[in-house]
Amino acid sequence: MKRITLFSLVLFGYASLAQAQNLEKDYTAIENKVIEWRRDIHQNPELSNREFKTAEKIAAHLKSLGIEVQTGVAHTGVVGILKGNKPGKVVALRADIDALPVMERNDLPFKSTVTSEFLGEKVGVMHACGHDTHTAILMGVAEVLANNKDKIRGTVKFIFQPAEEGPPPGEEGGALLMVKEGVLENPKVDAIFGLHINSRTPVGVIRYKSGGTMAAAQSFTINVKGKQSHGSQPWSAIDPILISAKIIDGLQTIISRETELTNEAAVITVGKIKSGVRFNIIPESAEMIGTIRTLDYDMKDKLNKRMIEMVSTIARAYGGEATCVIKDATDITYNNPALVEQMLPTMKRIAGDANIQTQKAITGAEDFSYFQREVPGFFFFLGGMALGSAESYPHHTPDFKIDDSGLLLGVKTLTEMSLDYLNSDKTPRLETKLKG
Image (cartoon, rainbow, N blue to C red):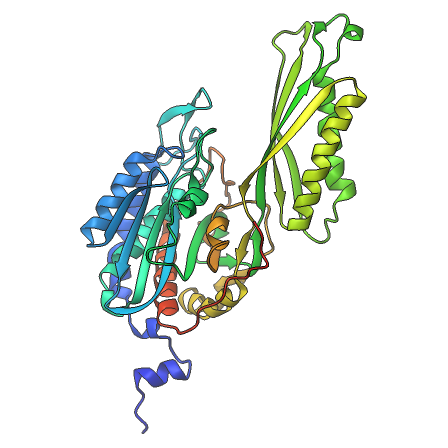
């Protein structure tokens, strides 16, 4: 009988190098630690650019593993560099570490009771988007890989990123600031992987999309100027609240009547309007803030242009004035098709063919996109909904929950994607057709 070597197994596709290098003992040993880390971080959440204790916990863990650690990156970010025993490429793995200004409302024994201040108001603080799971998963990946340096051909860079939900007004932060500060350099990153837990995807399932995956997000501020008067004499006023209502109505026609939604989805949402102080005073001004979501650069440019035109024109039609200022929050999250194709066999091996599922693009947004503008990247969604669960709550809500049993699959997938990528000679090129 012909002798079957490890090389021949890899060559003929019966196993990958990472598969042959069995890490099951490491995974078994790490699962309870990951769950414990996740629950501790969940119980002690911190808002964007204020993740001081979370960063300390991460840095201490990485240092205990003998990983080179950089702190204070983009304010509170932590970066770990793990060099394998053999030279090679550099792969980056990213987890976001910040929480949201949401008051938790569930019966979890490790629920958050933390409060803080956000935009001048006292708020609850909660990991209502699952960033606590991302952090714990990457801490687990770091430990597994640190214990298996002999299997690493190249370098792994662990990026624990603050302020994914956006820095406070007037501050820089998040992935954009990390890139600006050179997080993808020294050593230069060849590819980057990231994941996001999903409360409505069953545990054990991974979903992804090649190409454009999540929307570019922009924020806008509209300031309306009118003329103040007594509420009983509207004819002597220019009502900014009325003008605001007309503007809101007009903005929605840009989506429903001017945007070719059969190509890609697009959204304009006014999230807050502030005006007036009393029931019997027509105020002088109004302010609206909101978000724009687009999955196509041409559509993004058109929506921006039309919003600015429409806001000022509608205000003038009613005798007032208005300005619209639009700012970028994230770019389009774009999964490099060649990198996706290269890593799919790894994902299918780890989770099983039936559990790797494609999905349509979504209008949620991720500042992981700023890393993908610089290097080829792959961002996927990890199931966090309990199997057979009758209820699941959306992200960014007080009742949001994640089943901890889904975390180990995240550890396994990122670990073995890293090993398989580094042990491959393939290096997908960045698609320069994307523009910022």
